[in-house]
Length: 303
Image 1 (cartoon, rainbow, N blue to C red):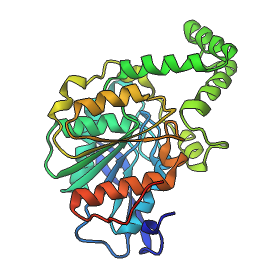
Image 2 (cartoon, rainbow, N blue to C red):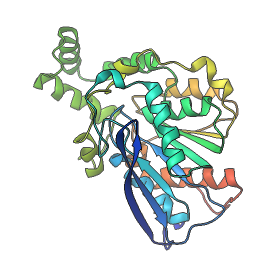
Image 3 (cartoon, helix red, strand yellow):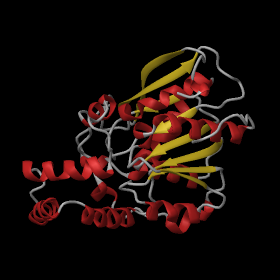
């Protein structure tokens, strides 16, 4: 890892719950032993919907630079309560939950990081023009779920023809629980979700604790804020992979829509560059946060 993440302060972690709508929402705060008063917390939103925070584990290293990093499992997955009423779950619920987390943990001023669906949630938060939002980091994030689905389906054309046929057959027949379909989707996932083999334990652990009530693109298929991107006025960093299921075409839409947004494309990654190119990812993220705050380290270079 770069000098930025070596020989830095040690960290400690606190885990607990907040009450939200009569349920318990789990959170984890990773705190440096020596917190820099000039560095604001980084609040991290996981994706899915319903894939808990575990796979974002590498972001804990940001705490070694002197800033708190906060994670939480959205209601319905991971270590949080899992109410089984499907009518409870909505984008509005998760927007409200995010405000509740900020309030309960006194996160008056933050940088907000969202990965995949977490980025969609981060965009929704930014569009509410909340106080104390210093910057937005959108990793592997579309601005339209229908565009994302369309682009992801186009990626299937890059798979072996027999794999394509299995996926299309089972999706047409509604038999996506079939083992044959799941095996075919593994080929897709190892191409466009995470190209590491084997997958890191943090990713497999997250998938072992997914929520089921608000899971998958179908739950948010009509989400589209493309025509509102111009309302976002905070410094924004876009991060994505060359082989990402959220394709460069999707991210280009976001980039064009948010004035002044920066975009770093990770050439050796798919949907999880924080796992696939961890060192470079953390360097890019840390440099952006410092620059937004005025803590610019001119010694950082990317190769």
